[in-house]
Picture: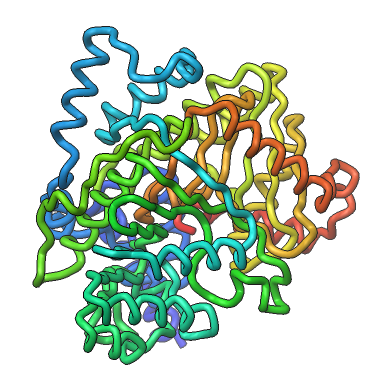
Length: 483
């Protein structure tokens, strides 16, 4: 018996030593370090398997490979805009040249080299059927190229409708390139794109693995949703390709999301983003600058905007900084919609400061989880904000997947990044930051319409929660830095 206890003690001591070596050998923030230590301590052996798949940081070589992809077609425009700022020249039209917009434009030029484009036409979609009807119609009109990135691409009704449109255009000689994420689209078999490839198109998995069940880059996903058609039309936002996004899964019910169709020169940075992601994904057929990829367009609409990207290849966390900047600049209101609300301390404190400053802060989250562990952490932080004085609404008409923020009816952001640490640090994301009061007011009206299908989370409702539910929320929150 003594030998057994000595063996158990030895295993515990070795587990502690290896846990500390494993976690501290890579630079990471303190909260994530302690969260991983907790996992490794509580789950001896099993914790190391989790860490191997989702705790390992990107290798320096892979980060270099991603960063080495030039910002194709953009450097000259970025430099010109920086010089304009240095000379105090106005980048924005007078109608949209508020001090807040100028500060945001400067922030993204410096942190992400994101050019500011004027005169874009924007259409907001909140319904999956409408979004895909418009997208497929535009795909069939493509004349030169269709470039597409989706985190989730499924072999179902809508997936096959999109594929059929891509195949038809590829057969007509249009260049068709597709990137789909290896984890998000894990159920998709390579043969799904066999006909498209035979017709001259290409489809590649982002951060894939030769062995579907072993992928040591499991934790770093391309969560972007981007479509570029002829360099003139762009789509980005929350909708993936799958029937659940049309509200056809009973588990979720109606799928409430937000997506953009963009016409104008804001399509150019989306095009550049695709080319960089493509070149970081493939080992063959690297893409280079072509004039046909970047057709400069005359004014299509009235909206000024910047396309901002972030990912684990940089420590800057550009989109998170944009969210913080927007919230801290607000004078009247901050409206946020997100399916996952797991903020780090900097974001949470910025929101709480806004509440305490008398800003009208409204946050909307779903009434059901698609990832239970993350949802429990979301409801924990929602309760914190209710206690601070914010209004938290629970969307009750299906599943809310929109990733939006609007301040003062003046500036808004719509994109792929959630209000969680994963989107801030681990996923490759893209957001549109829009400096147009008309679009911001439109987004604010959408929020108010969604309130009609929501209920207010009150302190009395929180007090009525069971102890077991509160325990699950608190326990999930402990792991928020690594969710």
